[in-house]
Length: 189
Image (cartoon, rainbow, N blue to C red; front, side, top):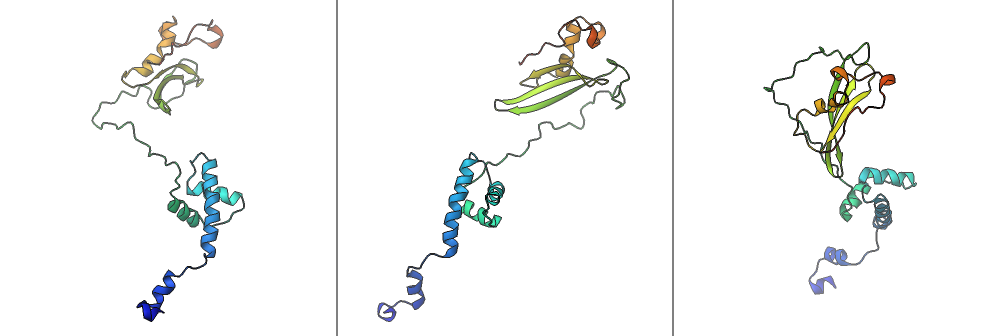
C-alpha cells in the first residue's frame, strides 16, 4: 500500500494511531493532582512546594517531572521579587560623630539612648518607624511612624515625647515616677 501511495513505511507508522504510553497516562493523572495542589495553595506554590506536598500525600515522583508538567501546563507559583536596596550610602557624605565610641552599654537607666530607623513593607506601601531606646533597659523610650523619610530628624522626633511631657533634659523618668504622662505623640504623616 505504501508503494502505491508513494509513502515511506516510516511515515505510515508515524501517522498511525498508537495506544497512549504509560508515561502520558501517568502524566495526565499527576497533572490533575498538581493543579489541585496549586489551586489549594491559592495559586502560590511553585515547583518545590508542589513537589513537597505531593510527597506528603504519598505521590512519589521526581521533582523534574513536576517541573516539566507545570511548565508545559503554564502553572506557576508566585515569584518573589528581589530585595531592593533602599539605601545606597554616599561614600563622600559626612558621617555623624560617634559620641559613644560604639559602646552601647549603660550602667543605669537614662544614661544612654540610642536611635534606630527601620522600614516595613505593607499592602499599602512602606512604613518607616523611628525608635529611641534606653540602652540600659532596652525599653522603647519613644517611637515615630511615617509613610515617608523626607524628615531627616525622625529619630529625634521620636525622642521628643519625654521632652514634650515636661521631663527635664529629655530624660525618661523611672517607671515608678511616670504618673501616666505620655512618652511620645505618635502620628502617621
